[in-house]
Length: 231
Image 1: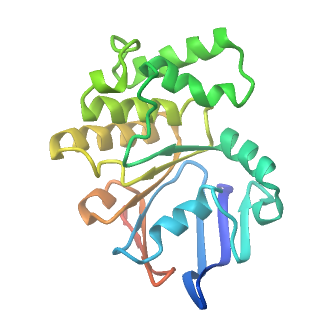
Image 2 (image 1 turned 45 degrees about the vertical axis):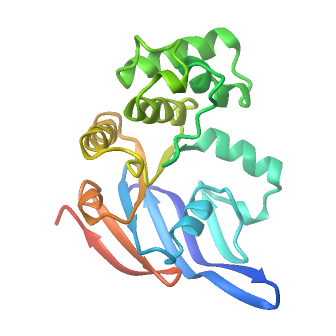
């Protein structure tokens, strides 16, 4: 039996908007197993962004438990949370979030600095990752010198910099044309199959979710349906 890498148990997230309380998550139960590719779908306002923040250990719940490899992250300090997040989780964002003044190589090296990896190893690993995503000849280019698809591939390489247990892709093709988006999805799919990486992808597009092994449908802050895409 595969181990559960991340498990959310009855997770609630409540925001106070003046005198009004808004429940973005309402008893969310979710897990992802080692080596699994899971898609989370839901309309705008369903709680997808808040769910990503919880799964990615970017935030702690108002109540409920989030277990990341036997650690209950709701009991960790922000500095402890940042350390475990840096080691265990890689993020691919819709907006790329690359630093414009840094080269592709430097952008990929950045997360390794916070994990105390020496410069020689950082450079070697970043160059290898850029080669992996097909950008070995673009290592010294800055984001403005790269196409949208190339920037997203730099972002993927950066997400893999610390060899994370889980890669979270938040609408990874949202800012790309359909052909470039298809290439990015194909890369993620191959990376999952060949490297056995655990991937959680958040999308509003049913056609994209089909590449995952399982789709969880989110509505009003909780899972309302699960679909096995392989069955």
